[in-house]
Length: 287
Ligand SMILES: Nc1ncnc2c1ncn2[C@@H]1O[C@H](COP(=O)(O)OP(=O)(O)OP(=O)(O)O)[C@@H](O)[C@H]1O
Ligand SMILES: [Mg+2]
Image (tube, rainbow, N blue to C red; front, side, top):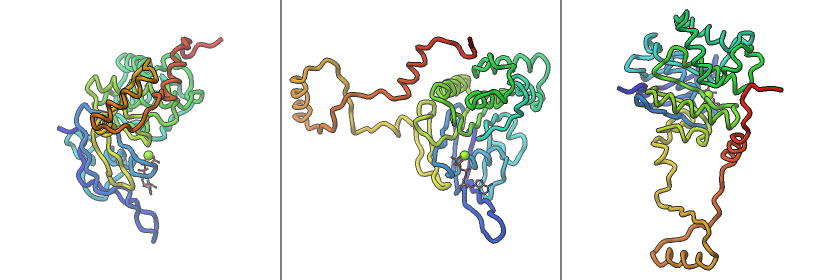
């Protein structure tokens, strides 16, 4: 069974009197398998949030259908096992981290020691244990994103819908969030996330779909999409200048074409993370 299945899912937004309707999603067929991490990519306004909201039943579809674990999205039961991180989470800023989770836990019918245990577990999971008793008014953007994730996980849902989980979060924070998503996948969860930056999510997604102007324009496994089968890159170290010419001759003799010779670059993100990893001070420690 697929965790999510949409058939010709279409959404037109009414733009007001005499201004017609805007086609935000056009006959989307999306199949997210149970246990996979699926990334919905696309530029601003391509229909990613619209897709997530339709699957959650937060807005009504114009035509087509959508099912979550085979239950139509119009039915309340379809949301029982779903956690959601909205695009711009809105929290009560006077509540502390722990109180926020308690609030959402109670909404899901949780209480007592079971809920308290779950709150501590989640705060530790998202790296906010040190800030559990601080009000959200004093949380940074990345901390709010983490509390949003913890909130989505409170009732231990089987499916997570995350709208731009790494938006506004610094590289180390977004790496933490990606690691968390991978850990969730290991425990059998299904994740559908949206992003407009492939680089941010390519290492967590099993498959991605690219939306543009409400239409799916590309879909596939990430490893297959980003590997260029025709090219091979060989990285060597300590090769004298003179030997290089010999290597090139061999390549040409074998019928290959030399496209480029370059010094491999590390990514800025990798450098940033390395520097931060060397700095051993823990979060929340002050002098
Ligand atoms: N409530 C609404 N009323 C009218 N038009 C809307 C509404 N919500 C979204 N739209 C339009 O639908 C299209 C898709 O919007 P959507 O929010 O799904 O895009 P998105 O891919 O999530 O973009 P972003 O990357 O900016 O979050 C856009 O053209 C947007 O202007
Ligand atoms: Mg959006």
